[in-house]
Length: 240
Length: 240
Image 1 (tube, rainbow over the protein chains, first blue to last red):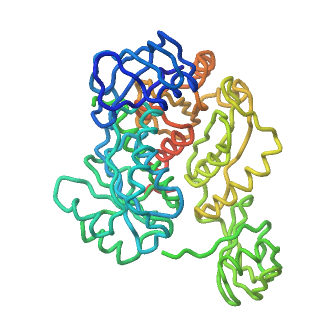
Image 2 (tube, each protein chain N blue to C red; image 1 turned 180 degrees about the vertical axis):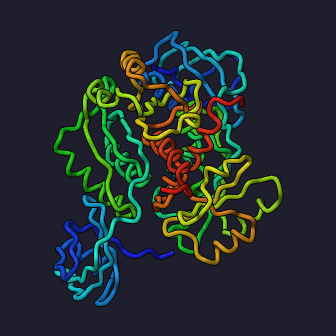
């Protein structure tokens, strides 16, 4: 079950490549790879990957031979975008991790009346690096789009046209999520404490249908994991 | 969207009830309930609940009037038991939380060759309190069974008979989980690093079928959340 070690590298090109100190340490110290050992390099922006071999196993400045880049084997295959209400604390990172690992197309964080934290744009770089790390761990060859936090109305605006399934998770809904697993889909999940009545009415007016994952109240990250898991499980085994 | 405050109380009986210091503080300090305010008391062992009203809002020794207990409205409705390989760190607590909130019947932790930690029995009380807290938060009126960690063979032993769907999550499986969401079900999920080849062969010999959630490698808690989410979403909206 041991998987080949993966590292993110920008701009893959066939040939000799000097590796950064971070990548060198990851390969040679964390994973104890030596000269001649194989690994996989992937470029999450380009969604490409290539086989690689260590030429020099210096823990601070290793060198590798990169082979011909190819399209990444496992890209995010779900045409599902998550509109996630922003809660307090570290949850943006948790949401980015699960969105990446479950193969969703993207996530847009949504500022809600009831949300506690309203993180600024400076968090974007951090979230992108969390996505790259989650892609590395999960074997995904690209990363999802990450947007926001945007105000509620602005986050919903791009999804008003036809051709996309618009869902809003609500434990009180009569329609099961299971009956609406159609892609492309945009999935609206409330922050801790839920959406306000006004926001729910706006979502309905924008064509979002309320669907339930069950009668219990789920933490936002658990709701996102469970809901995206349904889309992933539906896709598993079917042709890409 | 404000929900009625819930507290766990053992042995619900109609009538006047003096509340413990912890419960008093939770109601009167954390939630700032006052005399005459309503809350719901639930007994997770008996799967019962009742309406209640504060008679005395002392933050250290409150008193409440309990009304007639009834069967809990939302019990764990999924006839799904998770056999979860034990990893390192705090993940047992995370798994207990998600198993409770998604409504699964139970979880049995499984010691794996590759697992890092092998927590002792003394953790059971802690896990039970985590389940009660997750039940309170999610609105569930009972708690799942929590067993283990047991050795691999011993954990699989009770599930050898007919009448139960036996699944083993594996990203390399050809069969999608989606095609096997039948209850009652026992769902085997590997620890960080996966099962050994020998363990996988044993699971197959015990009638476990490998199913995939998708091609990506998921952290164990994310795999559990996504897989149980499929069962929950399938049940939502259908008659209990």
